[in-house]
Image (tube, rainbow, N blue to C red):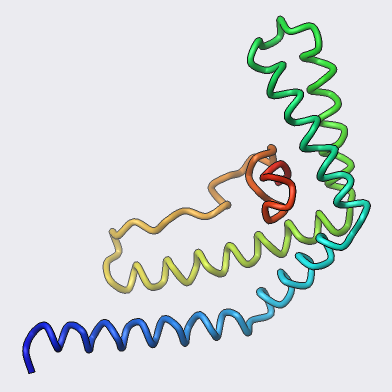
Length: 151
């Protein structure tokens, strides 16, 4: 067997194992919870209304923010965006989806970190949302259902 054939065999074993790991992750409670809340979020009329409203308020604030505090509507636009963000935080479907998404993100990050550190303790592991400690808009916390406008 040539070196190229051995490498191809090694790669196929690695890929097969990776697919098995993916299947096991897909059968996990974290994924089940995530999918449950993703569906609930998508079908919750109040949550969708809040997401659409927040996207509009965020866009208005971003427009005002270009000029900073000197824009005549800056403070009003900021307050309106913050008020909608608070409503979103109080919405069970949005709040629970964000928690489920965070739990799944942590699971995937832990798996990635375990694999990477089994190769080398100094290897860099792609970051997860834990590094994003702020709860500002734009993190895509609603799975992109709001154009990345909620966190």
